[in-house]
Image (cartoon, rainbow, N blue to C red; front, side, top):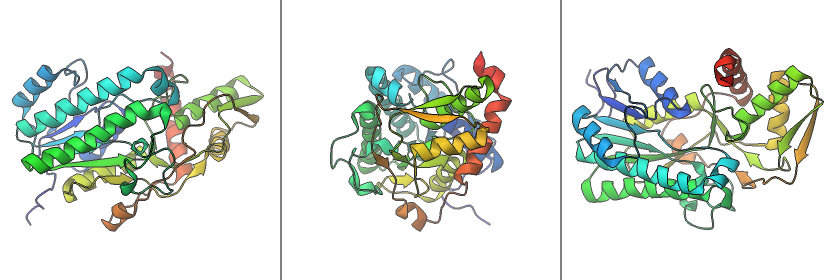
Length: 320
């Protein structure tokens, strides 16, 4: 039986950029489970994707057939707000160098991973792909969003001008094993897991959550994203970027209560309303993705339990 034109075989030379991060490591696990053995992996010490010359030399030497671009400078509200220049510069540099080098060195496919923060702050909910560039961005993460919008447009431009098969996927909020659990620069779900765990361990009477607790967010387990990325790398080829999510959301207050139950914390919840909420609601319309035959399979509580188990197993390493 012949493989489909876009199939990833054990012999496919696949570069997963950002393989040590939350998303990249999940994609590596997914590809390995599929039997892909020719994975090209390079950490920052081996290849700084912000350096154009280094990227061009590496691509010329390694000649990957398929590139999955999961490398990015990421963080939560505080990190985005505090390091605006780094978020804009680093992400623009990484994606510009990798997309261009992939095309120049004959890659047959590139999958670019963006973020749902590309959509306007007050976009109609749920947000479909047509919302892009229809209103102002959320100010607390606009630097990252602008970089990711540029990545979408670069994929489209290289497809239009050069016929390069570059696709763009826009995941919703992600979580899972390998996440960043820092209280200073992580996203909300891993930060809550750490807060509740430490509060339970110390017997703290209350846990404080940023903001009012009213914003609503959608959460996708990173293993589901990895599955979608591989599915679409093999089966999808179009200029239209695609939302990747589960199609349902939860308030931050409800999320905090859920994390507290999973962790086993029985104290009180407090909300620091002096801290920013960010976008009021972020829910993706995943109709286009579902029409292609893919749906997420991990329920939120089960995913949080698996993530907390991973956190406990790696607690000593995380504290170093």
